Amino acid sequence: MLAKKPPMGFNTWNTFGENINEKIILETADKMVELGLRDAGYEYLVIDDCWSEHERDPETGRLVPDHVKFPNGMKYVSDYVHSKGLKFGMYSDVGVYTCAGYPASFDHEFLDAKTFADFGADYLKYDYGYKPASANGEVLYRRMAQALRNCGRDIVLSACQWGCDDPHLWMRSAGADLYRSTGDIEDTWESLRNIIVSQLDKLCCAGPGLWNDTDMLTIGMRGRGNVGEGRKGCTDTEYETEFALWCMIQAPLMIGADLRGIDDVNLALLKNERLIRINQDEDARPPYVFRHGEYSFVLVKLLSDGEMAISMTNGNDGERHMCFFMEDLGLPVSSGLGLDMTDAFTGENVGYFKEIFRAPVPAHGTKCYICTVR
Ligand code: GLA
Image (tube, rainbow, N blue to C red):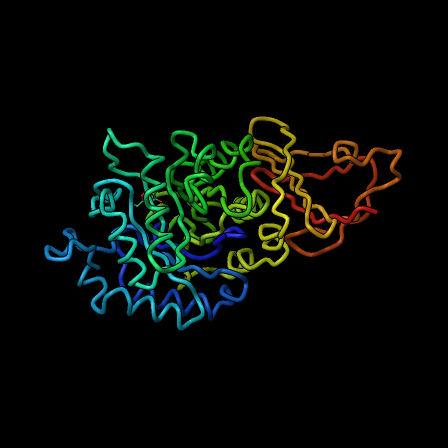
């Protein structure tokens, strides 16, 4: 199993879109180390769409890196990334073209897997654009899974199928290690709220070997870059909600902001060790949900050491008092037990509570706690 825990890393798409090149990748690798992100667990550096020439090599039929963007080829980039103690990721698509119109892997799966192995790739994001209408998506993911399994290198298969055709029902069987369950994220509150709410009834499908990918993080983008441009970005409170929820639902944590200019507040959020611990918990139990309204809910996730993580999200436009009853967590009054609660954002102990817990939650905000039962 290649993805025992939700993959963590960086992907170029959210900020750079088609404007990627060798310099950006090398500088990002440097920043992942310098900013302590590698040591916090972010290990994959993934190059998304738009990395290749528009034509395959006429003689070998292979995909070729864009000579201007990657003048020294892809192995050079991958060697640099590996030299920093990171892993290297590439991108292709089940269709005839990638979403941005570059050549993709339809009917070239085995050759392309070999090419990615020769590049030194450890991860392949595999998109769903331009799939021939007559082709079966499930079979195309099975094909690439087989191609990767037989390419001579361990390469994580990150399916990117936008939640079409109920992938949670068959992606694990097909051989993917994670699958995109939603459309593309944008750097806005509405986008991240709608993504998370759309997944609340599918959380039980994520687990070791197949993670439910709610898309790359927008934390720290602040309305800049490919999926941020022209949008107002999110507030710090909204970015906190994004990170806490991606951690609670054990989604892959792929950073999308430009690390060369990320602010300290959002960097600290991305490195929060208590939240990362929730995301990477060994038992990988999905949370259960109490809905408090269309966009407000409580998530409860059992952790491997007997503790519990609990989040309360207020998706409304004004502050709300939210609560949960211990009885609903399996701790009735007759148990004599309550919760000793630590704020997962700050590490501060907030006290010991029995029967009920109540707290004000700001608009678009999330409270998140690590709790010991006693
Ligand atoms: C799709 C994917 C995105 C990104 C782009 C690249 O839209 O969902 O994550 O990879 O393609 O073109």
